[in-house]
Length: 76
Image (cartoon, rainbow, N blue to C red; front, side):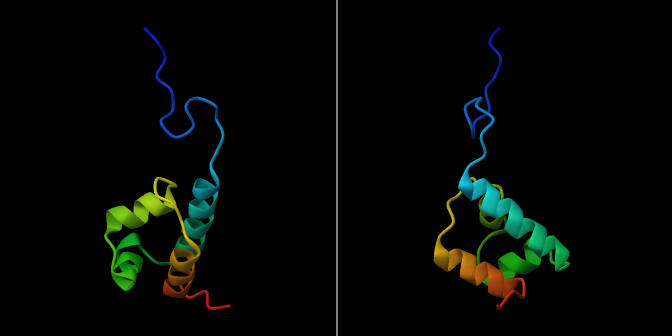
């Protein structure tokens, strides 16, 4: 039986830029003491969509990053 490959990296082990950015923003959200529910409500998006962003399953845009930063209290 063939070994199942990672659906994100196809077995290469490489992490995408979206995954790196999402992980960093997730760490900042957690450091701010905010839950997915709180931030998703502030952004008016679903918890699932926010989770997909944080885990690199959906692409980030500059606009999304700016809204996210404001939602977690990073205005600078």
